[in-house]
Length: 130
Image (cartoon, rainbow, N blue to C red; front, top):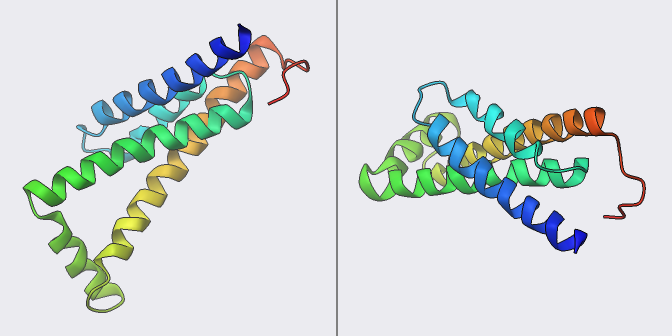
C-alpha cells in the first residue's frame, strides 16, 4: 500500500510541477520555473524521485509551450534564424533541444532542492529501497 501511495505522490508531483511551470511561464522571468521544480520535489521523500519529478514536469510543460508556439506563432522560424546566426543555416532543431535541456536542468535542480528540504525536515527513510 505504501508503494502505491509513493507512486501517486510521484505522479502528482510531476503534474503539479508541470502546471506550476505553465503558470510561471506566463511571467516574463523564465527562470522562475525553478520554483515549480522545488514544489515538485517537495512531494517526494527521495532525492532521485524529487529530481526526476522536477525535470519531467518542467520538460513536459516547456515541450507543450514550444509546440504550441511552433503551431500558432511560427516560433520555429525564429529558432532557425537564431541557429543560423550562431552555427549555420538549418540548426533550429538544435536551439529547440538546447531550450528543452535548459528547462529540464532547471527543473532537476529545483526538484533536487525541494526533495533535499523534505529529507532534512523529515529525515531519510533507510527502509525505502528505490
